[in-house]
Every structure is written in structure tokens, then in C-alpha cells.
Length: 55
Image 1 (tube, rainbow, N blue to C red):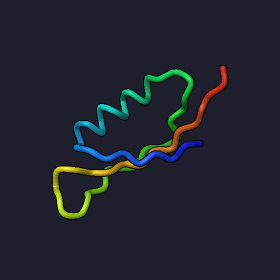
Image 2: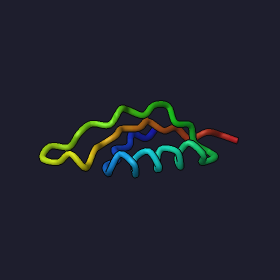
Image 3: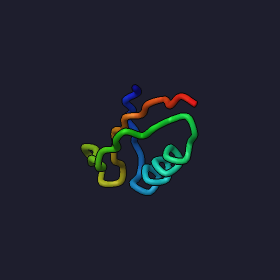
Image 4: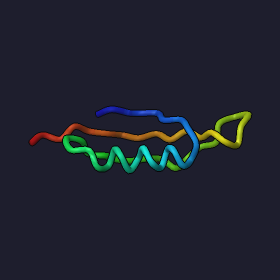
């Protein structure tokens, strides 16, 4: 399993989450709610757990 930390704007994080969900060969186990980064209200971070699926 991979544990991934992503950072960006809420719009970009949502776009990338949808992109991950459409990929074959992986199963998105969980995605956290956006957390605000200190010192900015523009950028957020999200944590995801991803597993490889066998075909």
C-alpha cells in the first residue's frame, strides 16, 4: 500500500483525486478531507491510501 500526501488548491486536489479514481490497476482505499496549510488559505493538503490491484 502507498500512503500519499498531495498539496495544492482545493480545485487541483479534487481534479487529481478524480484522475486517480479512473486509473486501472489501483484501488483508492481512502482520501482524507482537505487540511489547511499553515500561513495560507489558498493551499491545502490531502492524504490518500492506494493499493495496487492484480488483474
